[in-house]
Image (tube, rainbow, N blue to C red; front, side, top):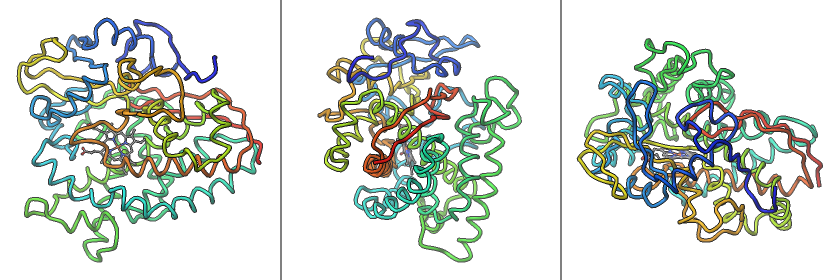
Length: 420
Ligand code: HEM
């Protein structure tokens, strides 16, 4: 590996980008680089004979994300096609267009503005320090299970107002749902067993039943006795002059649970790997952990790009980059590919902690731009500031990668640390 290079698992330029298995050996950069070069908007045929458009260039991902009139989120945002009843049962704000989307998003957005999120900094720093001071002296441990998987969920518990002692079970349910293609996390593997009986549940996962029960209990407690937390705000508000239905509330709770922790934790783990591969960058950051941490966080976000895609559906016959798209076609925006697009980023495979500008699409863009972006930025920045001020050097074992075509995840990451 050359200096300042990102871990690139070039692999097969014709890798099946649809298959969960492909991602167990790394993101198939060669396949996406070829697509960006030869067919930036390409038709991906699926096993059942249907297919979707894969959009792989930065400019096109931005165009599709921002044009909700031509590309609707209301027909589903994952690659899978959903029947109307599945879609209705599982709908959250993510599967709405304006104006419905705007009304729902307003329910929670005041809690996630950069200004409000800045007020969580002290609490998160304390939490991170507490966990690091307990774990780092062990010397050798699994960075994911001991640190990366521990931290975002604990802050989320505080924000939602649920007991931190429930963090373990909440994160396990989150794993079962979002990692529904990985046998380590669930026996109900989405592409291997019949999930028909769970089709009306988020991620077709039985774990959603547990999350729903938990959310029902949390709602009951707050309806009787409102608290100063996000869940109470949601229950009290009436976006259409009507309070949220029970199903809307439960789906909302599930979305927060999954989106708020399963993504940030993988970003933190990838960051540790990229820094190890780029000792000069690590050294530069270690010299003064807080000096460049904001810009460095953006580069970790770009390079890790853990939410690999989301989907839209064309509402009319149209075109992207001259390629005709028919009304009703699924259009999948591959953010991870866009974040390595040579036309947007100079030397995209160089890990440059001072990269500027850095218009990555890790959080998407447009109306659905990640609600938790400020929170995720804060968490990643603080974990590294606290980590780098304590650790002199570290060795890593091989990352054990998640089986998923959706989340670019690291399940385990053995680390050996020498403290400063
Ligand atoms: C590094 C961490 C994260 C990544 C990579 C990420 C990625 C994304 C992306 C790409 C979208 C856009 C989806 C679309 O256009 O359809 C999104 C939306 C969303 N994210 Fe995040 N996210 C992260 C952290 C968080 C956190 C910490 C929270 C909450 C606490 C959160 C909550 C949400 C919600 C609620 C939406 C839906 C927004 C909407 O539909 O208006 N995310 N996220």
